[in-house]
Length: 110
Image (cartoon, rainbow, N blue to C red; front, side):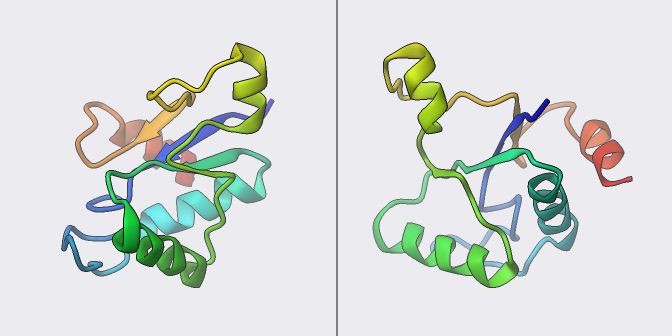
C-alpha cells in the first residue's frame, strides 16, 4: 500500500542556506526518488513561498525529484476529508527538525 511522505526542503533535501539553496543532501534525494519509484506519494512541505519556493521546486526537478503536491494536501486527501486544512496530511514527515526519524529513514534506504 502506498504511503504519503512530506519532505522538508531546507536542511533536509539540501543544506540550510535560506534564502539561497545549499548543497544537495544526496541521501535524502536518493530516498525521495526511491520512494517515488516504489509508488509512494511525495509532498514538498516547506516554509518557502514566492520566488524562493519556485527556486526550490526547480532545484528539486534538476535533482530528479517530482512531487505530487507542493505545500498542500493530495487531491485524494481533499476528497476523503472534504476540506483542505493548514496541516498537510502525510504518513511520514521527513524534516531536519524531526525527532527519532533517522533510524526509519536509514531502514528505508537499505
